[in-house]
Image (cartoon, rainbow, N blue to C red; front, side, top):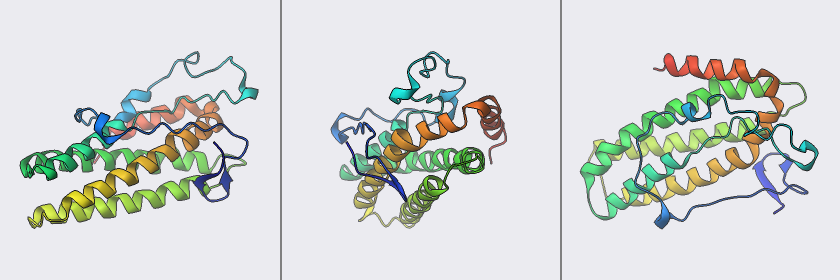
Length: 204
């Protein structure tokens, strides 16, 4: 596939980018929302693709991680709205929101600054992802406000919109930014992973 990557000034022409979307009906029930950053810790070099032909676009993707637990939680909230199971939404959404905020904080306080200060890279990808984060949390804040006020009529539509935004945002991260960052920052891998661990230990 070729075309616009979703980042200013970055296109996928000449690159083979696989976008693996998951249909809502095939999503599992939402698992516990512990930080997904714990799942990237110290990927083995062999598993990361080291030693293979980097010239054929084998990416050292040691930062790759799975966002589907967030997508699954949003989808579960959406289906609970259809069934008017408001207690399910009220029980799940606060954990979803706080867990995603922690996830974003680590990106914006550790990973993005490390990438932006690397010689020869553009801030376009991180600017685009940061703008996505603002949009995501504006929508999450609106959902939280409606839950607090028991204004439930539009919640299903809000969760549908949030689900679509997250899918697109996560595709940009997983398929384009994280492979680029993994390669650009590989020499700083140990220090970055240590910073991520420290952030998890000192979360708000």
